[in-house]
Length: 220
Image (cartoon, rainbow, N blue to C red; front, side):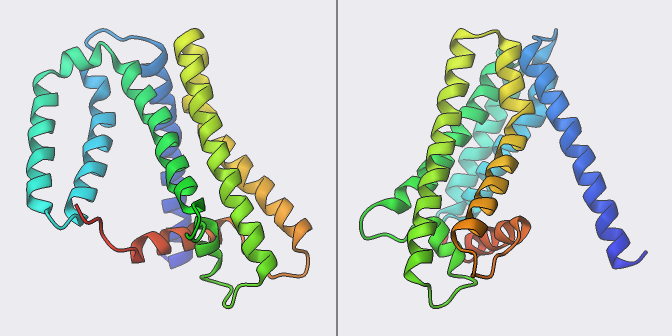
């Protein structure tokens, strides 16, 4: 199989897996199934997988990995009780994820720090023009507000609205809203900075991943 065909097949498989996970999450979040313990296993696996990844990057990796293993064993022992409150897990994933991303972007706006989007843009533009520095700082603020609004709407719908409405917002509309934000920023950038070379949305994501890979591991 050629490399291009293989990439296309992998992309289709990844897309189908993502759709299946979104549908599964919506079902578990909006309908409390009987024997719900087995329905939260995929989400718990993601939680502990991410935790293990950060633990492994830590300087005290073995201590943190041991803690992750202990918590995973505890969760497995109380799987049925956790399954009875599956919606809370998905709420924590959505609202908590948006809060964390908002902090990741927002904290780089502090005085004396380089905005996250400025750091990403600097991978392709060196030296950085002052207008690009200003623009990327504004984009960082826009993403910070985007994640903050998402978290607040998620919390309000979860607390006061029907569970199925919250689930549609948190599970089904989550990625489309992020894609819409990317597209809107790309359109604004082409209008505000018309004479500058513009990277595609996917190139921007690739640069962000590259930036994260080259970042120093946590000091914990």
